[in-house]
Image (cartoon, rainbow, N blue to C red; front, side, top):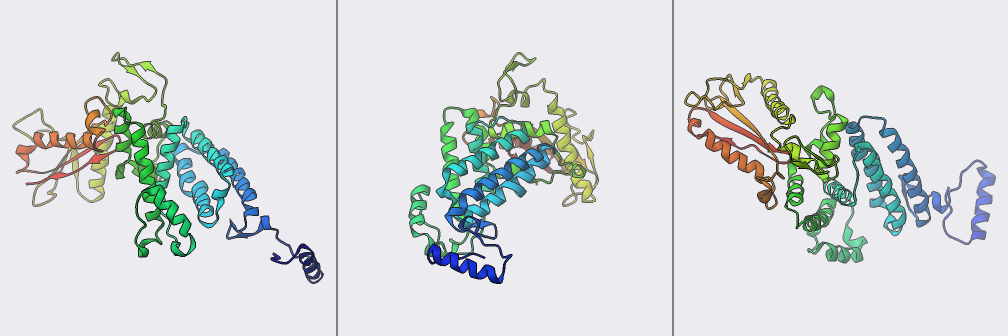
Length: 384
């Protein structure tokens, strides 16, 4: 029971009267008053945030005992962020910035422990951008009636006009302009480095973060081992991956370790290419379309041209489906300048080259090319 209003003497009298009738009834204080887990009065904010921080530390130690990929998925979708966002939407906890910063540091250290990645200030800022863009919560109230002052502050912060009245109930429309403004600020901070600009633009494409939302199930082939996840997170956020050293091709490898993605001596290039081919073949087989990898004698006019795969039955209009997979890197020296201007430049350039390669055979086969670099992809069919 919670007693509201009146003087302290009146509240004490009321409490004693109720206790005589219900001796075991619990009385709530201002710090205990919650509504569906969210604090109502400001007196409850410090204790609630401190308790959430304590729970976050406990869950972080337990998540560290799991595999990195499942732990990251649970951290992102099940434990910290949904609970924190719920409290932020329901209560003005922004009045306690010190407690929020403490919670943020706990979350930051948790991500660093789970992914085994050094979360620098720059990397953590980009992580927050990804979180802002990934969550859109629909509010079922009219913002006009509740926070006129906050609307003017939002216009000043985002730099655009308010959404249309009928659309103001959608939280995504309030979040996206500010998230986009922060994203452009991050891009501008790396304006002197074409390599970092290319990385950020590539990471901002729609399909680049698809692996973050996949179900980490080994039976589906989607489970990343701890080291693969560490490298993926480091490449996406620009965090340190390795110690500086010299490659066997005599090139200097910095802490970001991106040289191995384009080095001709890298052992992972062929396995990555084979994995993509096998994924395509399995996808076709699951659709009851039999396919073969790297068939010989398909392009008889040039024995050096051999596609990566071909269906054994017609795919469309009586023509077989032929595909060619190419892996390119956005931040390598060849594509760095173009990738710093347009996201997906490397994949689109590789697509153009493959179209020219199979141009003469387009009348015979329905050609489909699948091109992807580290973080963006292009897969447009060529049909004649």
